Image (cartoon, rainbow, N blue to C red):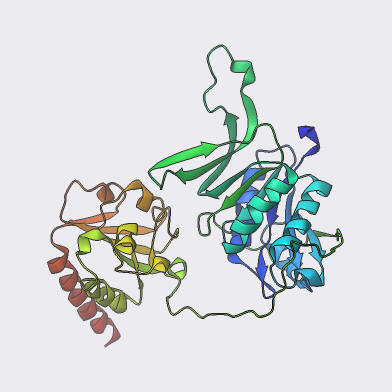
Amino acid sequence: MDLTEYKGIFIFAQQVDGKVSSIALELLGKARELSEKLADKTVTAVLLGSNVEGLCNELAQYGADRVILVDDPSLKEYSTEPYTHALASVINKFKPEIMLVGATAIGRDLGPRTSARVGTGLTADCTQLEIGDFPLNPIPGHEAEQKHGLLLMTRPAFGGNTIATIACPDHRPQMATVRSGVMKKIAPAAGAEAEIVKFNPGFEKNNCYVEIEKVVKEVSTVADIQDAKILVSGGRGVGSKENFKLLEDLAEVLHGSVACSRAVVDSGWMPKELQVGQTGKTVRPHVYFAIGISGAIQHVAGMEESDIIIAINKDPNAPIFDVADYGIVGDLNKIVPLLTAGLKKELAKKSA
């Protein structure tokens, strides 16, 4: 493999029902940042679907210099084989140095299958990406073997108990799936345009194709905590499922949403959709209440970018206070109701 043939950063621009997914815009923002440290600074979005050319302008506004459009009826609904064939064909034809895919339900299926087909590795569920040297520290006596300008892909490992940084020095593209909410979108540039390259590798059904007979969409009744401006999040210290009523009352007063830690989900107190952390969702609200949460690194990684963090914990040495902007040491069963009542009173005054 001639690594010099591979240039630029590509992202898989996931779309569902003719709408660009948020993760695609997040990846474009990160790709723009990473490209500044590469020789070829071109950022390319790979858009797969049927009758989706109209989405190219949105991708341009969020940072794409070029859009490779594979538009075919076979790609109307997501299906593993045609999408894998399309993305692998794009990689083989255009040879990206880096290929980023969102770690969504679609991306977690598409990414590894595509990487296997093009003969490269893939680091899954990344929470951090940067361009740097590998090994991170040169081996004494082997300094000349250290490689530069590689994609360093960081992800939780061993059930979230440690953090691993992985590189792919000998194969291309360097591929990663990236968790939703971890990367930031850039501000859209009105009027921005991208080069549109239409490409179709041809689609012939084989024994790996499946026929989609019916698509059933279930509407979730749980609010997406990644969209919340105020989150009231509880941990094991809340004590019980019933005690989360205290947090729900506080969230209601603030017009916020309730979230939780992994320990709460594992205990069956709250649904997985509300989990914050490395194995849950990454959130960036204006205000994040960490109530009865110890502050383990796995949880902090999912909320440390919040604008204001307010911690309530009876343990004055809890690690959560290291990242909190404001901290209250005491019994949450007494503090939270007082806080709720006080806020309700103040808000009533302002609205009077």
